[in-house]
Structure formats: C-alpha cells, structure tokens
Image 1 (cartoon, rainbow, N blue to C red):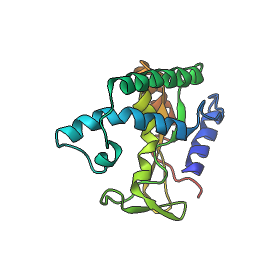
Image 2: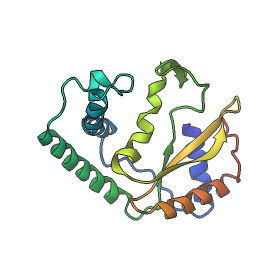
Image 3: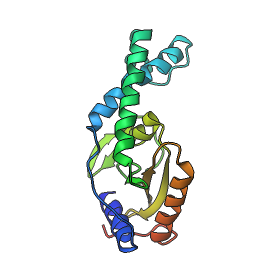
Image 4: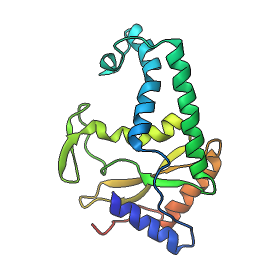
Length: 186
C-alpha cells in the first residue's frame, strides 16, 4: 500500500501537481476516540431496539445522556475545523483506502495479512473513519495491484461541500495512474 501511494504521488508530482507529505493535525488515536464517543449515540438506539451490529453492546453498556451528546457534537465540530484548516489550499488528501489490497470475503474479525502479520479484518474500518466522522467527501480510485493481482485503491478525501471538485481530482488521479490500475514495483 505504501509503495503504491508513494508511486502515484510521484507520478502526480511529475505531471505537475503539488504533492506534499504532512502529518494530520491530530493523532489518529485521538480521532478514533472522538469517533467512538460519537458513535455511542446511534449504537445505543440500535441496541435499545434490538438491531445492534456485532460488538455494539460492549461499546454501549449504559446509554449516553444529553450532556454527553452535546459534548460529543462540540468535539466533532472542533475536529472538523482542525481538519478543514489543514486541508485549506489543498485539492485533496491522498491516503490508503485500507491497510492491504483486497482480500477474500470472510467472517467479521477473521484474520487477514497486513505487512506479513496476521491481524483482525476489522483493521480496515479506521481508514474510512476520518471522512465518516468529519462529513468530508471521500472516494477510492484504483492505483495498482498487489503481487497476486488484487486491486489497490487510494482514498481521496476533500473539503466539506466540495464533492464535485473531489470527483474531478479523482479523475485526474485515475488519468495519471494510466486510466487503469498499474502494478507497483513491490
């Protein structure tokens, strides 16, 4: 994944795009903690009505109150402002869509290989958390294939309310990547 992202970034740079590497304006663990506090509210409703997804009941042992909801919404607003400020002047943020190329479907949580290590398939979930939590538009474009031919995608995340702009950026990335997935040098 890393090599594929680096290669498409280099190709974009060679095509005249301005590409910079910058750390997020917050620690990703901080973002996940904020997201988990926010997700407790819809999960509590699902648990209360008997429609909880697997693992939800352990996340919502006691229903959150109104004060917690308003605190979580304020925290989300602050995170959105930080991310929007970080994206200012950029067309999009390019990052992996997942920690690994596509893998065969399997039961939730069953192990997958990431960098030679066996980990829960749930490790793919945090890669969509930033866009989901902030309400920023996101899309995945094909940028390569792994050594066995499985597709690799890059996730592009743009500024809020600029969905059409992000789609145009996505088309540029696809065009620069050759119009079809290329095989990165792995």
